[in-house]
Length: 165
Image 1 (cartoon, rainbow, N blue to C red):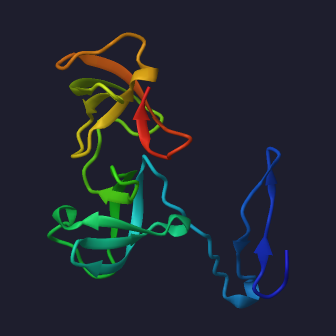
Image 2: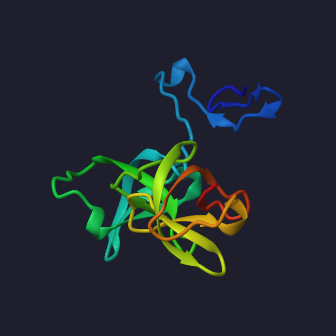
């Protein structure tokens, strides 16, 4: 730890925790922590700016995250924070929605197959505008449109997109 505009770096379970800027008691007892939105979970995020496509929210280390205009609450007030679900769209952009999926990363769900693409896999209705992909490699048996399947929602380690397994 350094005096003044201090930085703390620690270890936990063999991994290094990120440096967190802090203020010492002589600086007013305030602490600053770098916050990062978590993809595939609900997050409470601050508004950074407004633009034609919607609001940009502060995703911390992930950068600005777009909340499209159709999801902006009508009763929004200045300095409000928004409770949103964060995911990647089909073009790998981070997007937020005020809708809640039927399952989030780390959860199981019983979802309906709504389409099958011969090249990538099946798409499942998980309660959001963008359907959830169940890749062929994750299917123990071929699924058909209209069937319901039990899946586990997880991030793809290569693309950071949310997938069903």
